Length: 400
Ligand SMILES: Cc1ncc(COP(=O)(O)O)c(C=O)c1O
Image 1 (cartoon, rainbow, N blue to C red):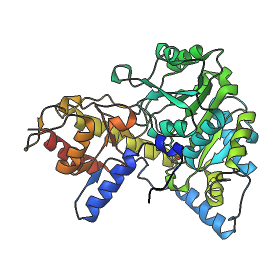
Image 2 (cartoon, rainbow, N blue to C red):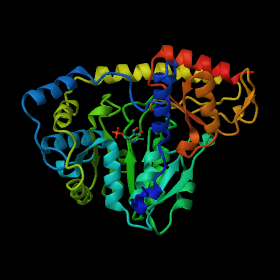
Image 3 (cartoon, rainbow, N blue to C red):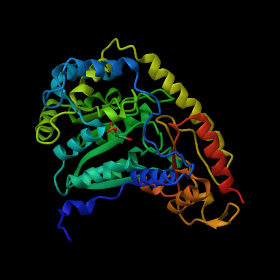
Image 4 (cartoon, protein in one colour):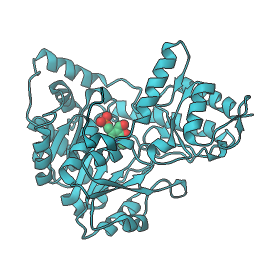
């Protein structure tokens, strides 16, 4: 049957990470031993205090609808955390709790954009930005930032990308897929370019807990943008809570009212149980610092090891990423030349990722999926043993 779907569907691109997950699952089901570097989530358990709060919420029958965008108590707790982080006052009306950071971003674009509006997205980018902006009817304007500039756009690039139709700029620091972290002076320079322009900054800070350098926060550096900034964050990465679907968006009260108006007709709110558990995670005295520090220390050790191992492969180049849990090596040196015992020649990163799955039984995501051909993304949210074995397989498949 030739079913008619909305025009909107034609703007969507298939998700490379979901596609890779499906292929890995199929190979594993067939008994093949595949090592995956595809996962976009911490491989740690949610801390016990949060899990127990979730269990308690079920036992106490906190299983009914809450307010749209979450109970005031949770929104106030998140607002208080934002006060501490940004040094400026937030209140509960300025926060909405969402179904992961992903819904927060989608609601933000839906509330901000009309057809014809432009949203500036630095590349390499997390792929959902592009599809969400298109679904909102707007046009993504991609600004590429390569390895020579540490995958961070600069003021001149931002100036060149602005137009009278620019509605928003997406900033993602630390970034998926590169792990790039903007320095305070770089954020300041971007802020100066936006001075006096009616552009909203969508600051996706979902990896802020996982940094290996001093973290500069957008609103801390550019407080005058408080009335034009939407902060997106959540519990997924910081507290290893991806499946709980707990994110939030925070910003000026009028924008948050618009966002909640859409949310009221979409999800209403995320799970009441996740919200009750998050109340513990966002309490000012939450005993979580040790668990988060241990997770970040493990990620740092793995980052150092995967970078060392990648650099040992002829044709691969990488600088240590400053945050998140992804390595994003340049692999142009592996293209257009015979690889491995069979002398296979790959002409692009898509083919290289296919080859590595076929020949080395490792799952990696091609950089093209993130608007950065000539790269691969390897998540190191996996054990050191898997990193050692996976990279040994990569090296063997890349050497003749
Ligand atoms: C940059 C970025 N933003 C947002 C998200 C969405 O996070 P959540 O799982 O909270 O929806 C992800 C998830 O991978 C991400 O990498």
